[in-house]
Amino acid sequence: MSNINRRLRKEKFAKILMQGSGIIITGSLFFIIGTILYKGLPYLSLDMITKTPEGGFYVGKGGGILNAILGSLYLAGLSTLLATIIGIPICIYLNIYSKKGSRISRFSKLIFDVLFGVPSIVYGAIAFSIMVWLGVRASLIGGVITITLLTIPIVVRTLDELIQTIPTDLGHITTSLGATRWESAKVMITYIKPGLFTAILLAFGRAIGDVAGVLLTTGFSDNIPIYLDEPTATLPLAIFFQLSSPIPEVQGRAYASALILTIIILLIVICTQYLASRQKKHRA
Image 1 (cartoon, one colour):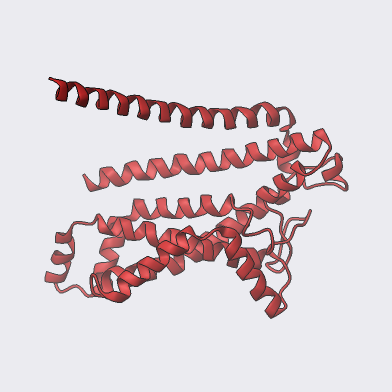
Image 2 (cartoon, one colour):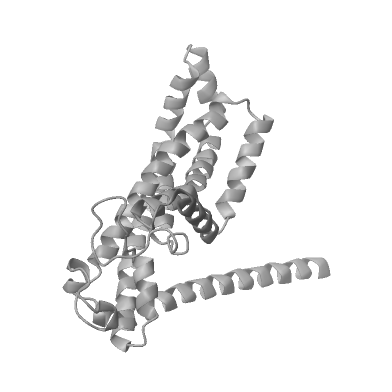
């Protein structure tokens, strides 16, 4: 009986611990969102979304952050597109063309795992050094290159995990029908298509919210970028610069900017959850 009671106590303690952890995490999330809403909603206006900064915007003058919103979308969109174009062939090669369990496959996956955990400021510092060496100034293209390097491991590792969930029989069937490796790859990509979109959205969400990687490479501008070699504002940098101001109104605008960024991330999360549910139904 004592052994049973001991196990029941451990079970109850583990349950309390898990419930407590859930409450803390959920409470922290609501606290962050509540703070952003409380401090940012009064300063959120149509001008914030539809206008670019006027002279002295960061010291309390009029205008909005349209340049930062579009700059973030340009940066995240282009870098995610490049990361997907580069990442899909890498993942196909590692899982279909190279021998399963080969040294190059295991080593490459290890490298991407390491790159996945490298802080974004490291990518920014490396990209900045390359830009100085090439004589390239801070611009949209510099930020795109930096964030592309940051998001390639996300795309590759996410797709690699998805490919591991494909039934082994599917590969055997395509091979027995005389399909080439490339044709087999197309069948597998079709099978994980909803998951592929999830990987792309995860990379986009990581790209649009990054600040350390673009701090040294994109520069900052009050204008909407037209060319790739122009400095570009991003929402995280706009929030950083506004919070650095001693003027309360500008700090309030920073929370309004954070609210806009949070809404964008929330939409990405909702799309990711929807596509993930589609992926589960697709497997069933």
